Image (cartoon, rainbow, N blue to C red; front, side, top):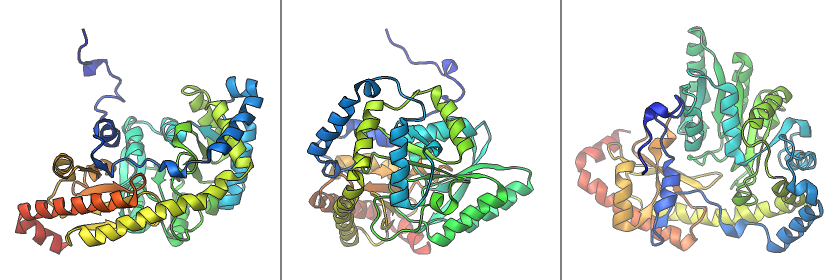
Length: 416
């Protein structure tokens, strides 16, 4: 007979933990619901089957290496190819010794949190920021400096003011967590001057920058150099993933940064996954060596660009004038602002029931619990026609909700 797990049995870190709303939505949505919830890649962007077959044959010729335990850092040959890829695509020169292979970029976030955080450690995050990063950090009960954003990402001047206050009170910052290129959920790209300013602050106040870059290769215009490119790897701990540019089912990502940080990351990783699957590493290594991932990126951008444009056109056509959003310069998402006073979480299940459309409520992306009137729409998986239909339905739904809420909501919007 099963029973509820009493909180007294749970570790302090796990007490009060809540499920990620995105994962919950993926688990229950019916097939007749148009989902703008998860940021799943379009299978049309996956590598060609014949290339997979050739890469698998290569992995199988390395039979013992493919199916034996691997080194915690990752296979040396794979890390060498990642370093070469970063040099080609990002103009940053790193040694393979500066790189650790991870089980997706989520593992990198987990290891960074265990490496740096204690209860009440200070961490700076954008408002909003990636929901699953907060889920990882919250385990360690840190204190957050929440940095406001605009349509270009983090307000670095606001961060500087908050740092000045923190350090004058005797505190210090462990790291800034940021998604400067293809922000999740904003879709923004941080301008070059802000990137340089952030690096200057890291030097002045002596903290690390965790640059999360899952969407940095899925861009719709020219973007500034990555923070790790500007920094050279002294202050920046860079994490990325092959999930968006190869295939998410392989669960491979990587972390790059200063050698001393990487050494300690390896120690932390030894106590969890031990190593990423060598077979998977060999397959992706073969793709990198043949530059098949490089050559597929333009095709990936083109596929998502069509979808982004379809959602942008539909938003302009069907969304009520009192709703605002950020048009993404990179990544998969439109972050949307309802009139103040409306609660996107409360409205979600009505939207699913009444118009068969799902989205992600924005509140979970806010470390301070705000953002109740925000939501995230993902265009990565639906077709352009489905995107238009879904946005049309949502526009009609929100028009109805705003009308029901009455004139007070409209006036509040006008004051913004």
